[in-house]
Image (cartoon, rainbow, N blue to C red; front, side, top):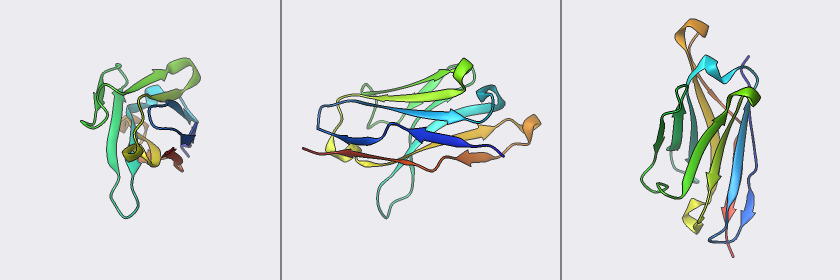
Length: 119
């Protein structure tokens, strides 16, 4: 069973930075993409950033230029560096991974980590 464990959330002032981590229970090469989503209360989850096994990245419009997704293959971990945080970045952030078909496929989610941006 795939496990994704997020960490690094917390309370930060506007303009501050946080780095989220997502540790996978197996090699992240088993996944086509690793993603970060966020969810506001009562809303659907929205894509924040994604990174492919080849290192190609993609970002939601609201975070471009402020957030950076990266991966450490040796540690089976994906990171989300969040800079210049705004109150509207306050949400629960989820790590998600899409497993390659030859490994059984499927999308997996972490438990989420709360990020609060407030003075």
